[in-house]
Length: 177
Image 1: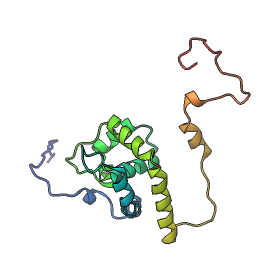
Image 2: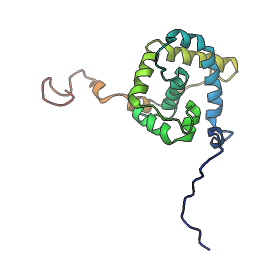
Image 3: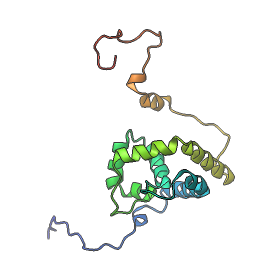
Image 4: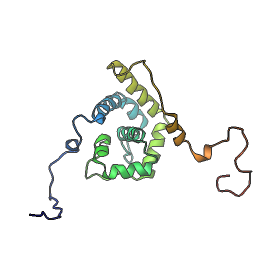
């Protein structure tokens, strides 16, 4: 007998986001390492934020979201917020509940810029490296980077011909002159 193509949603669902993430997924161990680094940085976060006023996005969530953006080469904050809206793995990694709204991309960017302006991102990555070295997860063996990916991240507006001559003459009326 043919089954009906009907979606029946429950009024209540008893599931945690972690239930949707495979036990052996690489982000599980990365999240553990990142969370330890973020716990060690708690004093720095406390010093950066005021005790009163409107609450901002938690700096821990901002840092984990930036990791996702790097790991998955998400090209913009707008796309990252879209992914956080429907991707349960990403929600779990960042720490956003399934029924919690995702931030507006401009709010995320403003909070991220304020945090990164205080060198928090570099301190976070340095702490992750220290923890990884301490756990024996790093080696001094060969490391390489695919240069085509780095070139792809470059902005068209930052492009300069190798011979030094401008691509378009100044005042040529082109949009990106």
